[in-house]
Length: 280
Image 1 (cartoon, rainbow, N blue to C red):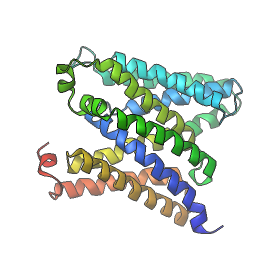
Image 2 (spheres, rainbow, N blue to C red):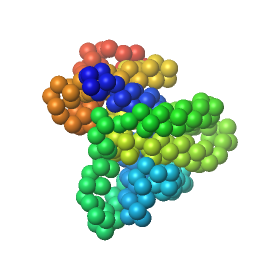
Image 3 (tube, rainbow, N blue to C red):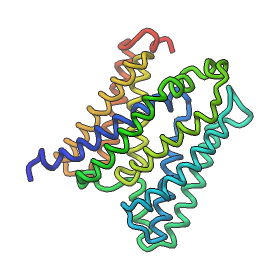
């Protein structure tokens, strides 16, 4: 097998993941609910561990359904606990509590499952990205295209609520209702992503490209392109270095995202970027 044949499937998978996650990351940064991804990912992981405890096949639709049910519960909680401005309890506290409880529950479930420790490790790291198959990539692509169309159709609602919540409130929109659909679609993305690349890479794909984009501009179109581009560059570097150094792809890719963020911060300090970004 040539290098191109070895690296092409994980490269395509990373591009697909970056395309949907980095866009959703812009919403997450705008909403200031940074750890909602980790929390929903941990809910999905809890569902995966329960499916394993119930002797369901890892890639079966039943296992995905169990994970999706748990992410739907998380989506409902986050929509219900949304506050206008500074509420009595910050929503980030609720998000953190859900993450901790889901993590603890996952440990309890895994303790009663053979090779439970390995299962927990897999929820964090995912599978070895280099082993991803074309059928898995096709399943991801189909799911994310459907979700992308869903977000495109409802883009005005979701973007307004994320970036201009006061305008949505003045218009009398049922924000919690729309939040539920946003977080549910978000949870579906997480449900498909976590078994493939794990919680750590999912969080990285979501947050780091969006943070880099916010550093340089506030124009939504530019932010989207910049997030996609930075994610593609970091993923490509990670895949190449993983092959050259013979190291696990997942951790190397995450580190490359971190390195690219450092470069972006240095460029920001040198004055690169829109004036709007500089003023914020």
